[in-house]
Length: 533
Image 1 (cartoon, rainbow, N blue to C red):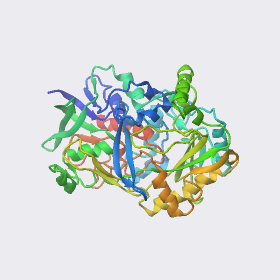
Image 2: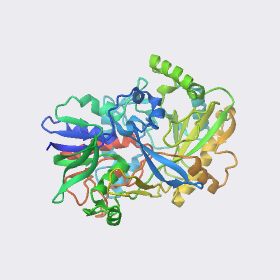
Image 3: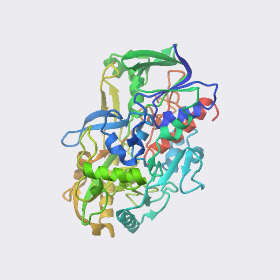
Image 4: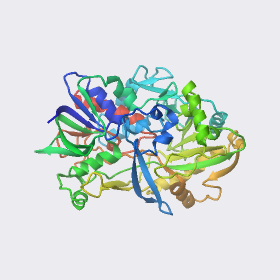
């Protein structure tokens, strides 16, 4: 039987960082297991290639969730299924969140995760195009740059934002006030830098690091209350791999609690109903889930500006792709959203509670399992969401079979806070597009349409026409209580030698996108594993 010192399950944003750090000691053996394949398709390095990747089951998991909205809309949550995980198929936006987000972790009883601890970690991992500073790092493994600026629409959106009182900035992560500017993204020279490209591939030559792809972990092996390895399935064959020191789950907020539950660690009644023997009755595994729900607004443009013309047909996509391959420029070199604003829905708030992302493109309605389509007529779109939602959903297994579907309950806008802030941010989004100079470009609101005015209509529109942010947290949340899934060192309660290092450990939402925060948290977690914190 094969034995390693450390086994990491999931080669996403966290797993790649852990593999980088834990394999630094040549005397330590490390196994990184990924259920997907290798990240060799050129579409991963092409920033806008994610539009095709998200609909392809070879590169993305598609998890059906319970129907949402007034018409029972069917929706799938998408996660990366390749080396790099979701960092290989995401929109590449790099947000770190606010100081208060990390200090809140400490306030909730999780020492070691405050801003004064985490800021140096962010600086350590960054190679920032804006240069070194008090809040920026250079020479780290992760390139950070601003979105390219080819479109006059983007400048006009930013100008409209300043007209609303938002401060224009080159570095959206340098402060926590109301601000607007070009997105920071995990890009360099027009190419995506996933966690695999930044952290894993540069160390893949290490003889003490083994990367196993197309390998599904079906359960954690335990003996006498300790995790001793994992059971895997690959090409129809079952196998067991042992860990001398630790098993670390880094499979994300959906797959990690699924693996725990399949292994008998979770709510006792859930496990029993699925036919799984209870090892540890941990009631919040799969619960306490929070997720961003994005409102969408789209507008028809008076002039032929933006990306629609270049991306709306296969021929146009091919021509734009040829331009990208020749120059590393154009629409395909940009992140998912070019402009970002963080703002308050009420002036008396201490910090922004909403985020808006704007792209000079308008999309066709989503079709689950299909690539994203672009409208032929020119348009512009904005996505906005409540930064720190309070409503909690959850997920649980339905069978002891690892291939069986999960039950996922999003519970979007399930709290008074989320509905109140959501309606207010939607109105603020509209206000931006009704402000000069961008308003002069617009002929009509095409989604959700001007008839949507009252708060209940706005919330229904967010459910019916909005999109999931793919930022789920909390399903293995850290905390000081005995019924919290993991402690502040990310150790799973009830089982020795087992940790969770991914977004599922966050008990509250970080203010923004999660890719940057979880890479920094994984870097910090490596110190906890190694005992160097």
